[in-house]
Image (cartoon, rainbow, N blue to C red):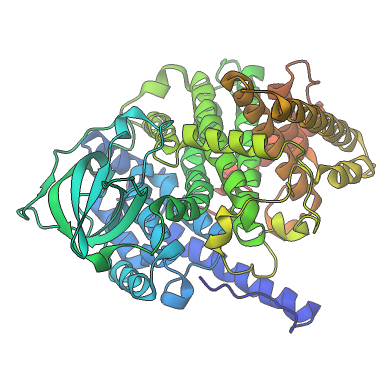
Length: 589
């Protein structure tokens, strides 16, 4: 994948001008998609919440929404620019897809993410011919489905797979996969299969055209209903001695290595897209609170309601900071991307699901509504937990982070230093080309968590009033937590056979510290009033408070001087119809 970078040619002014132009183009693209969807709350909008809720109840996608995405050429977002698409930066990909997930997570999975999961393996290791074929398929409106190898730690619902037996110049494919999104509508499949031969041989990956329903050795299994994302067409596939020609093998090496190259881009972008679904849950809760009079316990003036809304807003900003760092790290720190993306895939589904459940206390009985103004909240509550499933899912990602902590107990920054401001800014020069082969090379350090000291010192030196002092205190506390984690990881690395529960406890702490560090980095490197972030440190104070109270329940609560400005920002964004993430994107217009 080729990415335009500022390089060494243009001067600072030209580089800044190019950055502004690139950001303007992204905003225009998102705005065009948002205008196409229109106001989610308008009952007369054919692409409004009521229509999506009705389609969800009927376990189908909204045809008008699919037509809109076809007209927008959504699949161009997942095709690299050098192959005729629009994909240059992973953070931009996630940002565009949030507009879809804001309306319907099933729509985002079926029309965007489902094909992206398959295409990511092709971009990571396919031949030039395979890449060209896949790009042409997607750009012409075709869809893809994939069956990645399922690790032992994965979800039992998905724990099955295929075997491939050598047969002349090709292979015979056997086995079944119970649940594949898009399987019934895909034109092309990416399948990972274990080599069934003496001595094993690991996995191989194949890129094949989806067989016809009556093809010998192939069977499309019945649709599997799901609790969330109910509009997705989830089917199983079964193969019995199905012949796969030799030229259908994807790449030339191990399928496991190919999957490892694809997982960093999958794990970092998917949960970031799902922030759009959490945005809708929070927006619905704010609307409910504003609709109640001051004396009601559900009113936005009630302390419990205010706190729930503030916590949710803080968590969304925190999650977005971590997702931003992880998607940009794939370009800037490819050898560290496997760990950072695994942290995102582990932490974000947990945070966003907890956020939605906490907000259900604001809506009370209305959180169960099946129709009406608040029914979309119940849909989001069901959909969000689904983002933690899959072969690159939350539990498998937790194991990946654990392995990292055992291999690199020092948590020190690499000799070359951190990636600097580019890791934390979305409004700046272009990013380096993705280098998937480096995703599987062990990192020599930890640029994010290992490089925390300088940002802590910057927070301490910020000066100012009470919010600034609170930020300095929280940053210092985060630094102490990092130092304690470093010591515990070093002890763990010297012990024999560390208990799994102990390792997982360290993973939880590492993930939270990484999220807090990302938040501090985004605060430190903000570019100005045009970058979408609230002015001042209030948002960072509130987000860090959420991290530290998870690490230590005795951590001090944030001051009112930080809470009040962030609550005002939340209400302003609601009134102005802007998103609740880092970008404050205008929505529905």
